[in-house]
Amino acid sequence: MANMSLQQIFIVFSCLSSVYGLYFHIGETEKKCFIEEIPDETMVVGKYKVEIFDKNVNDYVPTIQGLGMHVEIKDTDSKAILSRTYASEGRFTFTSHSAGEHIICLHSNSSAWFSSGQLRVHLDIQVGEHAVDYQQIQAKDKLSELQLRIRQLLDQVEQITKEQNYQRYREERFRQTSESTNGRVLWWSIAQTVILLVTGFWQMRHLKSFFEAKKLV
Amino acid sequence: MELKNFGLFVLWTLFSFSQAGELTFELPDNEKQCFFENIDKGLECTLEFQVITGGHYDVDMELTAPNGKVLYKDVKKQYDSVTWTAEVTGIHKFCFSNEFSTFTHKVVYFDLEVGDEDPLAFNNDAQQTAMTLMETAGQSIHENLNDILDDQTYFKLHEAQGRAFAEDLNHHVMLWSISESIIVLLIGIGQVLVLRSFFTEKKSSGLHVPLMTNS
Image 1 (spheres, rainbow over the protein chains, first blue to last red):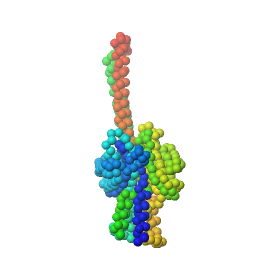
Image 2: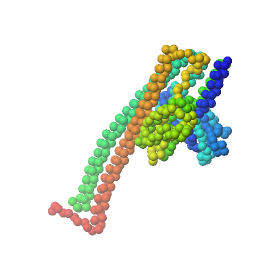
Image 3: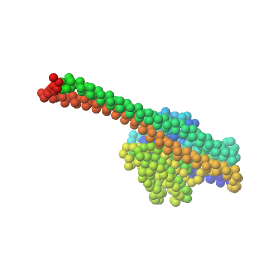
Image 4: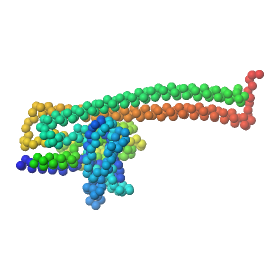
């Protein structure tokens, strides 16, 4: 019984202490974007909390009612896969269906016309196996510690494999770009030399006929 | 009791923030972006940053402790890694500055790790028993896989940098080739027109001298 309450106190304390994640400041009307380059079928979990600067208290306080954050996530083809407004504290998750750069943008849904206040945004984005919550899985599937560890190792190895496949695809794109540059340099050099020669010949021929017409030659 | 614990777990994980964060963001020219993290005293932290695209791939970085002491300050770095032990509990601040640049905006990646990783499973036993050989092996494999993932991220960023440069090069080669061809053509035609105008003016001013070399 005493053990249980100790655990609960621990949970409460860790709840309070881990409220302070990484944070930054933005204006009320500003938009901030983050880039995540991920392979396909990867889960991304983002958590945020926003506070507003109160001049009276000279500190950041939880936001007033109605002020939330609009989260917009664009995939590699700049198509929006998530565009929702959440409350001042929210959690968003998405799974990538294409490999590449995904852009996560946040801005407050404040109706102010000019940037009046400063917002403090706590943000935490976890990708792939970091996003998986093993405590939940252990409780749900009733796994022992060793089984949970094996599950975690399997997830990690799967992510490594996905990243390496993505790396192959990117290396191929890099090679194609380099070969395309090589081809362009070659053909454009030839083309420019040809244009130069043709222009030269045309100039000479035109001037010759011009001078002959003017009876100078 | 189990359900209540589970419920509290769900609540904790839903809104708790891990003590490690990596982000990639765009830093426009002439701007400074600061990030803050509350770190407890005694925790060993590592901050690693890398510039992925933009200009000469450099950025200024400054890391300040809560008591105002500057833990790290350097200018125009492409990549660096700082490890420090927090002396004071409080808000540590690190800022990336692109204020020296006039028109190139940079994409910066950083990874902040605070303290040790959270233990995997919540231990229900009141006392900690020594780890078995299997558990030790599992822990060691996990740490090695973490290193592999970190290295993969490092290589991914370097590859992204190279690829962005190659794509820029490809685009610029195309643009410059087309514009040079147009310039060559324009100059060619222009030269002929200017030359013609010389002789046309001479004729109108009456200085036309016919050269009759052949009889």
